[in-house]
Each structure stands twice: as C-alpha cells, then as structure tokens.
Image (cartoon, rainbow, N blue to C red; front, side, top):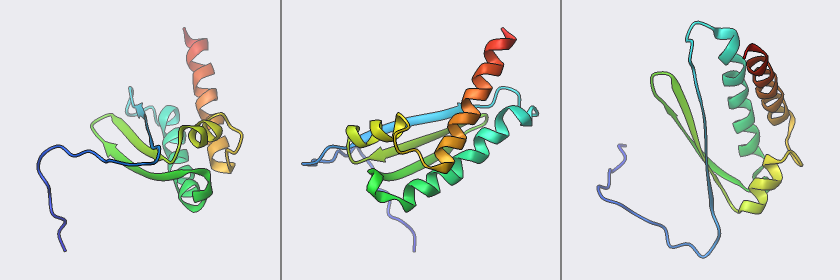
Length: 113
C-alpha cells in the first residue's frame, strides 16, 4: 500500500519536549575506504542499539544519502536524555565503538596538518 503524500508545511503542537539532532559525514575521497568505511559501519549497530533501548529517550532516526554525504536526523524525547547519552554516560557498546573510531580519525587528521 502506497503512502499518501501531503503537500505543504506542517508543525506539531506537542505538550512534551522533543529534540531534533542532525549528524552526518562527508566522504571526501571515495576510494579511501579505510578513512570512512569504519565510521559508516559503526553507525548501523549504534542506531539498532538505540532502537532496542527506548528507555534512553531515543525516538526515531531518518537517514539521507546524497553523492558523498550521509545525514542522520534523530529525534529524542528530551534534551536532558539526549545530552546524557551524547556525553557518554550511557553510551552502549556500539556507541563507544563509533566514538573511538571518530576520535582516531580526528587524531589522524590533526597529525596530517
């Protein structure tokens, strides 16, 4: 069954807080797989882990792909829950792996300058 498309702009009148977090990555050198593939591969398990642990406050994510860019739009119940997760207080296994991978790539980038 096809989804119906509603044209126009819409807003939500919610009595509860909601946080929208936008994160992404750009692939500068497509064939330098060792630079971007580990980070890309770490995203999916982390998102799955968030879906399985709803008590963290994670609601939903949308993924968008363009030529060299991957963007994730995440929805969270509150800023407090998002911040608590983002600052590592409750990062689960895959979240810690992604952060470690990002830190390693950042250090590699800094040393190449």
